[in-house]
Length: 330
Ligand code: ASN
Ligand code: ZN
Ligand code: CA
View 1 (cartoon, protein in one colour):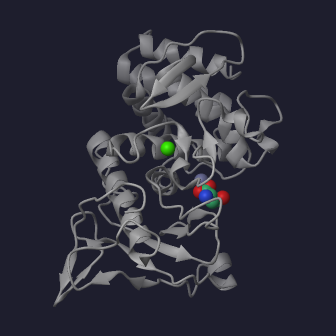
View 2 (cartoon, rainbow, N blue to C red; view 1 turned 180 degrees about the horizontal axis):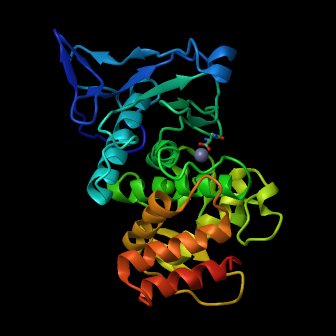
């Protein structure tokens, strides 16, 4: 892989060739788009989309850890789907993005100098980056982010605009980050930065959850206009809440990376740990949130989820209230 060292993958044998296709995880597979892009018809109506060419090999080895091999980014993408599948299965008993055991697929090498990745309702697509500031966007946190858009679509279905859109983006950053921690990969250990592996210049990524506003665009604190921002910036409120709930306010080094989270009201927040924070968010997402949930509604949903999981008046439930107040959500 490019970012996670040498990783084990499950292949499908077809005659004398091996396919990058995992029969143990819903036949999830990975293709090479050869720098092609989707037609307007695909982008607008989802018709005549390119599938790309399935990665195959005469032996059981794919990629060489460098971008000089087209397979390398494919290995990262396939590994990302594995870890995401396993995270949702072992943590929440969820069977794949759709919850049905069905797999999906990854398309790599989309377009030229494309600095983005996306979920389109069916599959993940990854650009190669511009090769100067950004490498291929196939890191674990982004893979987990994109697949989690599918999980949201098949649960709360948060509308992708306004505050619900910020919560949708936040959900993807939260679980993308949890996927990175779940992998426990020494080449890409867990942190609350999003996309640090392909940030060739700064190694700090596109966003960070402990202090979202440090990127100059995202916000740390709720205000009445937050729903007018791009959903990747209004997500800052939810990301900041989750970081505070899991890790607490102030300075903390996590897997060698310095984190430091301020609060919006001068309070001190004690974290309840990642596992409990993620369990609360997942239950809120899958049981209480709806397509129109806003930040106030997310506070209510997570308080209900914490009460279900840990009991009324539990330390976890009161931490949820403290953390939302610390980001300005009442
Ligand atoms: N990478 C972006 C995302 O997953 C693509 C988009 O703007 N939808 O949010
Ligand atoms: Zn997203
Ligand atoms: Ca990360």
